[in-house]
Length: 283
Image 1 (cartoon, helix red, strand yellow):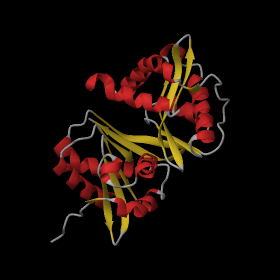
Image 2: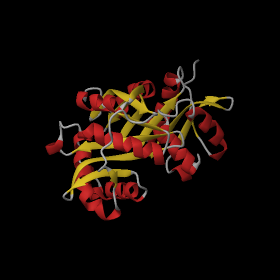
Image 3: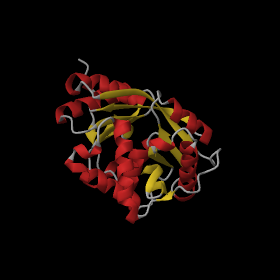
Image 4: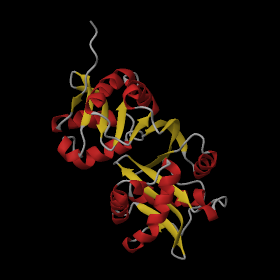
């Protein structure tokens, strides 16, 4: 009788194997790699269980089971790993708000979890993962700069608007937005929130939401509605790329909805190239 593949909770003894796996695709693995580099692989340190799949001391896939469920697998192992991760996730119950990661790993995982966790609020199966490893191809907007701590309250409405537009629900719906505000404050404190302010209002903003030694991931790109259609998104993103490559990581990445033609065109002008395909399931 065939047995269902199993996954186990990783610990500090697995750290080297995790690093080797994540290094096979540092752009796609940026979020998980950043957490592991900062904390190691013990669940208590990472802040969420890190599941592993493989045999003989070689990991073929990992899955960070926190607020986001993030599976990463080597090519060819996605379906077997999905079966193992889905079994653990089903038994634990849904604790995440999103399943997100490389589409080849997310698709089979969601296929197995949908009968138990579905229906999803939104499913975005094709989100191009883009990356740039050189200088931007358009002139950076010089007014984009790191946000100061005393500008957090001015930044917050723009961040909430971006989140609501992108995700479809307000980040203020849970705990009155305290967790979201704390996360934004941390990004400001660490110099990873950038914006262009005009008259105390945000014209453009973006965050460097994840950082590993090899790459970083830009999130939350937003242009105020009154300023759209004027090339600000491309110039602002170019400024973020320039800042990130000089101070954070050598490769800058982001992922975008395939149906967002305007954003995809802006990122192409900046010089981003497709590095893979992501997918998201939103609850």
